[in-house]
Image (cartoon, rainbow, N blue to C red; front, side, top):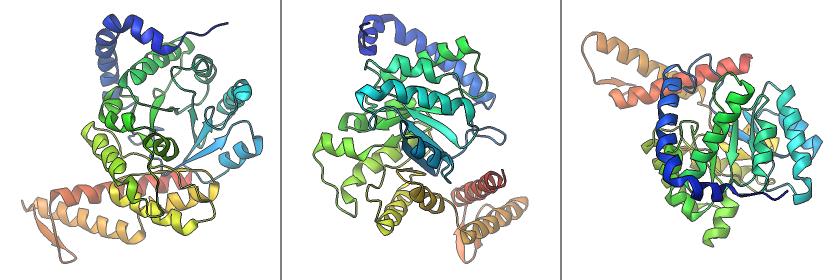
Length: 337
């Protein structure tokens, strides 16, 4: 059987598809967001991801190790780490995991959207306990729109309940970086983006030093695009040197300071470090709680600017403190499950 690429269909139906479908999707997802289906509110399954652990889906021991790890979410790979002749086996292995696992949350990196494997990937995967799909080589918002439309049809066909399947764009090229805001805004299924350093460096010819200063532009661009489009903070790229735990820790601290939340990981040990880096410390939670309590008391007296621990506190600082307190409570609930 010969496959026609999704890009062919995009060109064929472009004059009619996108305007009508974008309006319909916007209306449907707006209602879903009002109901809280994709909001990440308490009681929903859409939890923040500090660590997203990648594993080779055709190696059973790697999969089981990843599922038993401390990672917040696991990415089953059907793309980069899977040879052409193993695509069907990887797809079947991923589908089997989805039918038996409840946690951690499962993402699957599908094959490229204009390739010959993607339809089989989607048909096999959209039946189990799948939190989201990682879209490799995300460059054009039309890729997101088409994937959203296909997922909607599959969810309807199989009667899937619960929050809609997420789309996690993997930005891996200069074009993807420049189109980041449009990618993120293309569908409410997109809650955040992530970044693939290896393909990005191959595309741009950038050589990354240990301090990763060469990545400052793309990291800043993704963070700003995420906030400008109303999405969550992006997940940062992998740290490739498994033996360099100190280097990973430095990379995690850079990511957090730059506005990222979460890290792609390639070993369970890295997931432990990522979880620690993106969790507020006891001191941070204690100070945030003092700020929230003091501000609430001040507001009762119609005071909107106060001092806490000798520092000026106003509404933007209070909102940051509220996020820290809320995150600490969410992580505590997760640890108790």
